[in-house]
Length: 105
Image: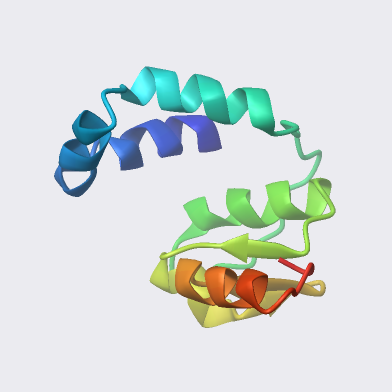
């Protein structure tokens, strides 16, 4: 489900120029992503994001993966700030933390 959301997100017009600039495609980017990550299948999806229940799937995957952070631009997820010690941060915050040597990202 989240892979489908990635495909949809990469299809936004704001990403089209950048994808073309790198002479790649959405399918190629998704294939590269899938090769770099460990896909998880949560057994339970908690009700956490009251304003957007679809975002609960992001939370469920993070829990199943024992993630330290969720990096998102989604306002509903960002409003939660954290769930079960999983921080929910923006991409800018993730870059800042990584630059500072924070491995909890």
